[in-house]
Length: 145
Image 1 (cartoon, rainbow, N blue to C red):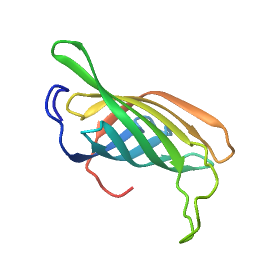
Image 2: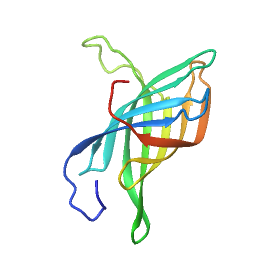
Image 3: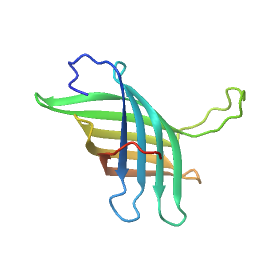
């Protein structure tokens, strides 16, 4: 988890809470496996909101990250990921239909991966897209979603 010039080796887990800082605001919990040699990531997420009707969207995330260094000692990490609905296929069920994405995530975090800001879009159960901008991001312990 250092600068881009360091040799990259390994895999680490990062869990975040995005938003939820205001009463009634959506909360996006994200658990990511980050593979540093390829600068890729995958994981799961859940968007919830305690309003009527309640919001509970599960998603499988896949994406990548890149370092953005604008000054010699000021770097941030851009994380981009696309989420797809969690589908439970029967054992031996084949490849199945094409599934459109249900989440689009853009997150900028500090070089130590601990905090940042996110913009994301999600599809509700009626097929409508909703956009959340400038949601605060914080690294949290990796508990179950």
